[in-house]
Image (cartoon, rainbow, N blue to C red; front, side, top):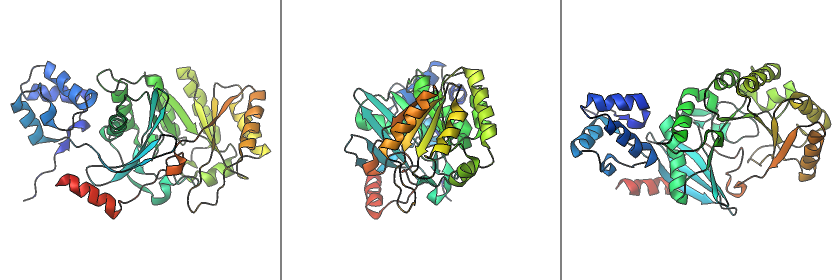
Amino acid sequence: MAAAHKQDIKELSRDELTQLMKDLGQPAFRAKQLISWLYEKHAHSFDEMSNLPATLRSSLAEKYDLFIPREAAKQVSHDGSRKYLLQLSDGVTVETVGMPRKNKLSVCISTQAGCAMGCVFCATGEGGLVRSLTAGEMYDQVMHVAEDFGTRPTSVVFMGQGEPFANYDEVLKALRWLNAADGAGIGARHLTVSTCGVIPGIRKFALEPEQFTLAVSLHSVIQPIRNKIMPGVKKYTLHRLREAMDYYIEKTGRRPTYEYALMSGINDNRPDIDELIAFCEGTLAHVNLIQINRVDGSFIEPSTQEKAEDIVRRLAQHGIEATIRQSRGNDIDAACGQLKQRLLTKAEQAKLDKLDQ
């Protein structure tokens, strides 16, 4: 008879971990110790939890798994960024990026393996959606990067594979563990969620008590063009999106960011920018212009630097703050829109097989 599948202990909430200790006849402080090992110290096994009684560690190991994603591959960019291919407990893989700058470390994590949104300029959706990730799997991506760099992350962006608001509850759990003092301890304003414009998620996010940051992938403010390049959010019209963003600003008082990937001849012409100005003028919004990164097999070309700079000037004339995002890691396909859902190569699988021996 096959062994029963054990639940990953990171799937339990804070309250559930507290109740677990009660159920096992442990004093209340054991829950705090366990949480510290799982999140603050990021233990790789129950055996590492040295201040827990051996009998408790044994009981936990009998009932729960504690799986840490395994690194199948790592690439290092000329700018110091590192892209990791991580394998999860069921063999599914995701890509994660660490981006150092001076004394700071930003981590870009995936919320799903693959993506169902189908944006034409993004490599992630080419293979469709495999599955959503758990909060623990998102948290572990951040910790993997932190351990590899040997330093504490200062910010995390949920901008890797997947649509975060298609996995809302787990994303929120991950955000809260990353923000928690007994977790990663990262300030809420340094935790950014990027959505394609999933309106129910935006409205729900507006009511969360923490000051997490919101970014919306806009990419066109002309409805037929946006429908074509972002088919997964076709049902969320620009009119409804603007209403949702007004609601978000009203409820939070926080400045959202609109991400606008510049695609030559598609969304960088004068009429396109006129509509972008009309959409943003008079709001708190900041526009983050991205010169789209080339994806193999795509017909889309990036706009020129000159055109991007001209757009920044035009937006500024209307009181709209805009910057041009400097792509990191594009030489290792780690920049915006370049993360993929892919199978392991034979060499990568062999590397993981050695770890199992």
